[in-house]
Length: 457
Image (cartoon, rainbow, N blue to C red; front, side, top):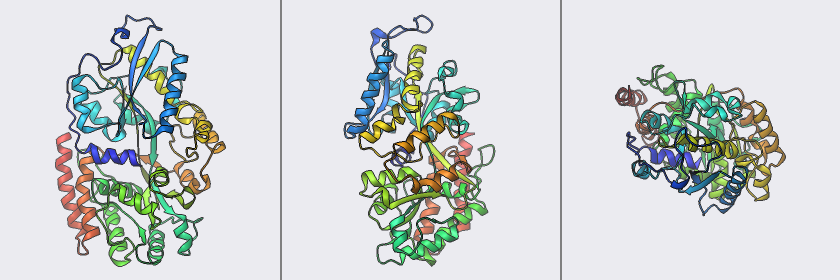
């Protein structure tokens, strides 16, 4: 979950304008081609963003191997990899576009895609995307993120939907059955009380309330309860509803009546990761990649954690990332970029789905994400290979994977970061003030959100 949270922390500052672009987006000018004039096998060089950084040598090695293998298959295409951390940075996004240094194939979070499209900052790839052989197998809900009307502007790399991450070890210590995680919010409350009762420092259920993460998780809980963030036209807020009120009342109950959420609040992404990795947090809303981050970066162990469906879920907030194309990219660059994306991001058993290599490198295999293809043939092939080379206890994620086949995925609302910032106020108030007035908090947030949404209409 770390990358998309970096997006949340950073993207709030993005001011996307229709900046002009330089004439060269990087790469070998001598190899550039002009629309409609180049032969199919004419040399073309493309710059591609989000190469894994040197600090991540295993994934960087795999990337470089794939680039070499791809170029061997397509000797007329040269890929110039660009690494940066984070892969998209609002502080440099505009400057890269204006200065002509934005990659031909640039990395994006789902959260930012519609803004980029509206600002004219990505190329329409509709005339070319039909060359992607498995395009028709990609999940429609995932591909819809990259569309505006009947036009397509990019392709996905990863996706996720939210569930409930829990510490199986703490469940056992608290006398709970880790093989039977909570299915209702009442069961979450009961389990959280038992975990908090283990002693000082133990937190039964953790929740965000700062840095836009509070509003983000409010949205996840709201969707799970069947609520909506905005009305059907996207121009008015819809979260001041019985479902929205239930989200905050549930947190108020656990924080102040059950005392199962700990005294430290105003938590952001890294706080809950550290608490989960430290073995003192019982549950939190999250996707399987939370466990990966906890294992890789916060001293946790895969064996100690599990992920199940969001309790009582009627829908699940989904997100992810992918790639778009520089609006100045020539048709030849776009075609070359699509070949690379198909090779590296969308083909079973190779690129990001080369689980045999990942296992050989000692990288974790077995998490039930990404799920770009659902129940189609490529999706089944990916699941089968992932299971074959699994290095993590896949059964710990089975409840999440099973529920994912039936729970509706819902993408983030329009003006997501602005709405999340507004709802941080309600979330933080409920978690830091025992006398917080939930009705007033939601009404105030609704008024502010309506102003934000009106500006986008």
